[in-house]
Amino acid sequence: MLKQVLFACFSLLLMSMQYGFAASEPVLKVVTGDINFPYNFVKDQRVQGLSVDVAEELAARLGMQLEIEVLPWTRALHSAQTQASVMIFTVAKTPAREKNYYWIGPITHSEEWLYKLKRRTDIKVRSLEDVRQYLVGDEANNASIPVFARLGIKVDTAPSMQSNCRKFKMGRVDLIPFDPDGVENFANGCELSMAEIEKTVQVPRDTALYFAFGKSTPPDFIRRVEAAFASMVKDKSLHRISKTWKADADKK
Image (tube, rainbow, N blue to C red):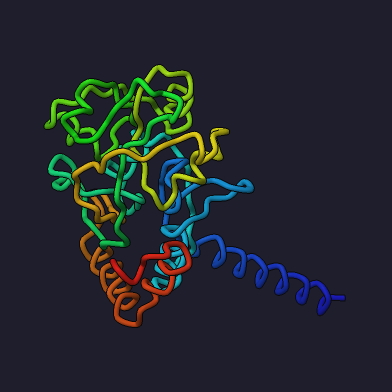
C-alpha cells in the first residue's frame, strides 16, 4: 500500500513538473491588424498570411511558440511600442515610427495604389495632382497618411479597413489605398467584385514591410531575433514563404 501511495505521489509530481515546463514554454507575442491581404488577415477564425508564415518560422528558430492578438491598428502600434518583447506586423517604416521601434526585415515589399468605384464616373484620376480634388479613405495610422499630407491630399480616417470599405461603398470617401496583391480578397471581403473597382495611381512610399519591437525590448533578445531572421534569408526560407503568397516574389 505504501508503495502504491509513493508511486501515485511520484506520478503527480512528474505530471506537475511536466505541466510546469509546458506552461513556462517561451512565447513570441505578436499584435497585428485585422485586414492586410496577403500579409495578415483573419479567415476561418484564425490569422493567416505571408507575415504569419514568416513569424511562425521565426518563432520556431527561436524555440518559441507564436501567439497572435488581433487589435485595431492604432492599438496594435501602441501595444508593440510600449510593451517589451511584443512584435508587430506587418508594418512600414516611416520617419515618425523609426525611432520608436527595433526593425526586423524587410520581410517583404508592398506597393500601394488608390482604387475607385467604377460606377463613380465623376472621379477622374490620371496623376497624384488629380487626387487633391477628392477625399481618400484610409485606416488610422496607416503609413500612407503622412504621404498624403505631404502631397496636400485630404484624408478621412477609419479605425479599420472594414469600416473604411463601408464608407467607400457608400460614396462617403472617393478613393482608398490598397496593395494590388491583396485587393481582390479585400474587395470580396466587403462584398465588392474586382469588376466594380478600378486601380488609378500609385502611392509614392517606401515599399518595404517589416516586423518591429518597441525600444523597451531587451537588446539581447533583438539580437537573437535578428540572427534567426538572417538565417531565414540565408537559407532562402523567407523567399520560399514569399513565393507561396506573391507571384512576383522573384522580382522583389
